Length: 339
Image (tube, rainbow, N blue to C red; front, side):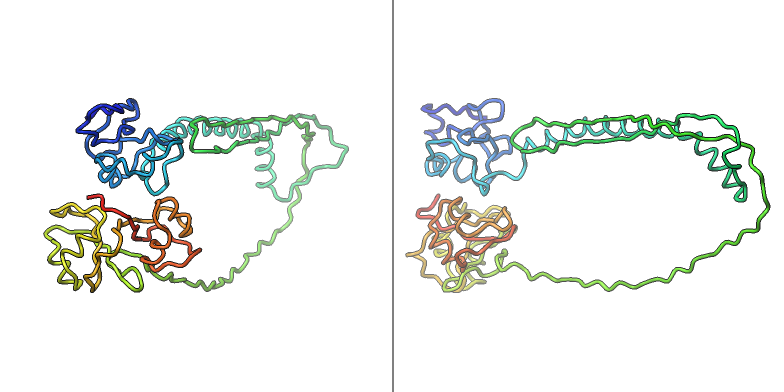
């Protein structure tokens, strides 16, 4: 655990002073953790593990776009961790409210069954004697009132994830509607009955299966037009010499184009590899990024990632106004290396 106080000497200011845990903004874990939260955002949430490693827990935090902002604003979607403590709290609240709602509905169904028992007995009598008839109005009878229960459930939806307040109202209305029934001695007449059995003709419904095309922005597939790159996730036992041989480039070129690359390689580390070329001295540094918002435009994502829009479009082979899909892998150009 580390104590972060603006102005204090935390490993010569290595850890961002705005990083803390939910219950203590001045204390944080010294390694990437879901408990580390950014307190310089309008809504306190946990940054991604990669962002914590490259910025929050490193001297590079001074170049973080959130750190540089003067006014508080929501943490960009691309920097947020996938888990959310607020969602888990909502699930707990539903787990408490749902059993109570089901219990009220069950009670209403039982009450309805008790009041309708009298009508059910009369129905079963005529079902057993299909030819029985009730004498006309000359029969004497007694009038009874059978209440009709109408159950009305009104639910006010939960509006926003930013608040734990939830409103749920349940209204149970019982309306007594008087009905008149007659009790009489029926006259039974034996009449033969004919029962017809319907014939069911099956019908066939043709269904079509649509096959979607794979996304062009995937791991281990060339990205770009004039210059192409590969985004590869490192596996156990791999090294840069192997990548240079496979993709016809050099170790120096691989080291130059990566925005933040730790050597020796970590398992599952993301590596940007030039595809069949080695001249990279005039190029920006590249940071791998996975799209988390389906249908987001290139321009909107470029602003959120604080990158040069022209380089972003050029090196990824994108078009202006193009909408991206959830899970697309892209290259984010940076002016200087995080290393």
